[in-house]
Length: 262
Length: 292
Image (cartoon, rainbow over all chains, first blue to last red; front, side, top):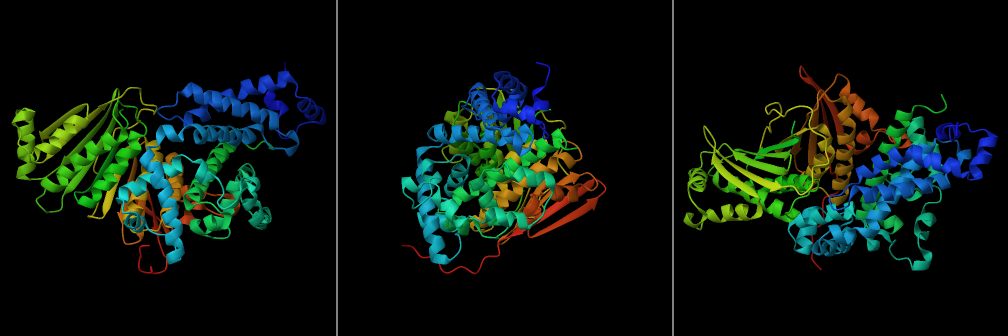
């Protein structure tokens, strides 16, 4: 085909292109996947872990790319790459979250993570602020280093238990976020910012955006956010780190691609 | 050039934890036949040896150099001590077989010998001892070679509560800095909340400093106070310090580094700019800790 996929998904797609997009023209899909495969590969490389063969990760990233192609809405007027990056990263992270905890984190550390989560809640309630690492270590009768290790491990790899919102039944899964935070988008709109970052923020998953807003607009501590949305502080910390990293990647990608509307 | 990280700090017992964190961070990049716990244990042993034997109770430097060689992770732990015991150990290790070594300080040597794929303990001239531990890789490194060779000297820790870390290539900062900053924050008595903030700050700093560095070497110095950390990075191009802060923009949320740091300062020298951020934990005084 003579039309490059990139032209097709440029910010100002014509009505006919949009129509063609929505028709899921298989040639367009194939061309897009081919064109953006290097992007998927480079993102996979960012998630290389010693025991995960790169090719497996590239497969996972490719799957994310295909999902991105299928879900992309050309009417939103954003460049395809900005949409694809978080989708692919999400796929890679899900892969690590679902498959890899047992492989990488020693059982002892997993148990420590759960014990720390409980201790943090307890001490935060008792003291009205989050405990220091030394206080956690003292409370749990563990060496400071093991507490640090467990905190690091909890961040690098999610667990099902840590990812599930606390105190909600399986049927209400996810409800706790939406209930407490309906007006987050409004608050985002109250303050102005750089255009690139503003558009990048739109591509951060809602959960991460919410946590970012609570931390940096409402100025809550991570423990206060944890309490508010019903997850552990470690989970909040992981969401923040992930969101900020995604933002950096998105901003870099958009800067590299240049301003699509120019 | 071989990718290298060098950490210099005071030879004190509480600093061994920082050495272990550095090793943990680097070990995550390496695929070896040894477990990460083994690597950490072996290097801790070498660092402890310096703390206990090198300076006979006086202050002195402990220098850890991690080299990502083709085929091996190499960790060198050095002191500049006059410690008779350490020197004797080194000379003994160089000349005796394991069976001939006495039980006392021979134990640490046996541990290092057992946990590493290669181990050497040698006297340094004019004084001091160097322990070199090698861990064979089972798969190649997945990091780019360093652009510039590391040379010591520009950043040295100025006191017992400071550490200096130098990295080449600078991209290693993303691996090393957040880890060291967390460990330093824990030692400074930060709450877990504020420690996580410090980690976010280190992430952002490591990411945004690379494009404005003068050369490929990232130098950083951490100062550990009471509920306060100072983090200095350099050497930056002219205007680099302000650029790092500006690049940390999270749009509507402000400049991330300014939001997280308690203060930001740019220092100028003829070698380039230095960006210094401080982060404090200004929590309310703690209620006494009680156990349940």
